[in-house]
Amino acid sequence: MRYLAFLFTLLFVTNLTAQSAISQLTAAKAESVGMSTDRLARIDAMCEKAIADKEVPGMVALIARKGKIVYHKAFGTADHSTNRPFATDDIFRIASQTKAITSTAVMILWEEGHFQLDDPISKYIPEFKGQKVLTRFKYSDTSYVAEPVKQEITIRHLLTHTSGIGYGVIDGDERFKMLYHKAGITDLFSTKPVTIKESVLKLAKLPLHHHPGEKYVYSEGLDVLGYFIEVISGMPFDKFLKKRIFNPLGMTDTWFYLPDNLHSRLVPVQYPEDGQWKNFPTTFYDPDYPKKGAKSFFSGGAGLSSTAKDYATFLQMYLNKGKLNGHRILSRTTVNIILSNQIGSIWGDENFYGLAFGLTGEKGATKGGNGSEGSFWWGGYFNTSYYADPEEEIIGIIMKQTQSLSKDDTTWRFKILIGGAVDD
Image (cartoon, rainbow, N blue to C red; front, side, top):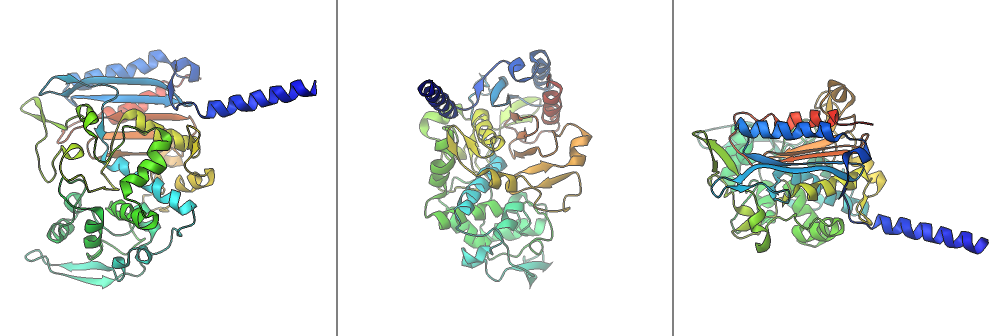
């Protein structure tokens, strides 16, 4: 009897181990995880109406609950120049959704004891020593006066957009647009033969919006951290992400620059003109940057392209407290730190910011349409967005590729409809 009991225990443990290695995020019926198929169908109607009303040309939407994909559909036309329809495995420029992945990479190295979060970045990138804050600016020639910082920029400041660094071409302050342009800072994306190191070292010489830690200004701090990861790890940033995050999680469609065999799945950026959808032209960036050019600028703040399923896989790792597909990416304790308020009341008392995501606070949750308290979320420049709700174990992702829209209500409607489909 003891032998049989031992054998049963061994088989049980072996089965659990095998289950932990099963490929992540398999599909299942909505009802099996407490969702209503009929209510999820409301999302079909919402997407189809938005396309008919010319709010968007189309999208891919994915919903997962308790590790099961219960909704994954494509709507509309991905490329009006060829009439190619959207497909569920389409690849999107995820822009600022890159930031959470870069932050995760930083925290992987932090767990290994390479640095403290409140270390000054100048300890690792000496060019950031002696930073100053802009106090006066002359528009005619971009000359300026600046005062020394009260405290140095720390790694935590860079993770939370409280460093005082700006965002150049998309900055809300025209002075910083001018300064970054004059200094030759590479913002967001590039097909040119420039590296993130070259851009970051130029950035280190420029003045700040404010004293570090005092305010929240959306910034290129995650680009700085991309180079910081190279310094600490001794690896190119793209290779670090592939080795430590993408390969372990099976995120085979997530890249800074797409290999040739994936080019056809990249969705063109579209915009409305004279009642028609057209492919977006080259402006301060070439929309085809993920598949052409020098392919050397690995932007930690905005450079990646991915699919809805790959990004859901990344979020599921967080819902699983740092582990997925048999691989532990982060400790549960580290995930708890990342998903905690790191900026105090700078945003007010409804929502907060952690070390990688926006976070829904108690007041934000009670307003409705934002997920439960503790939900984490963000989006990207080309109209992609996501949220994950740890309490309900829900992931919602809606991917579009658009610019210059006058109206698009699909993102907020999507969240409400997901909540309305919970049926347990």
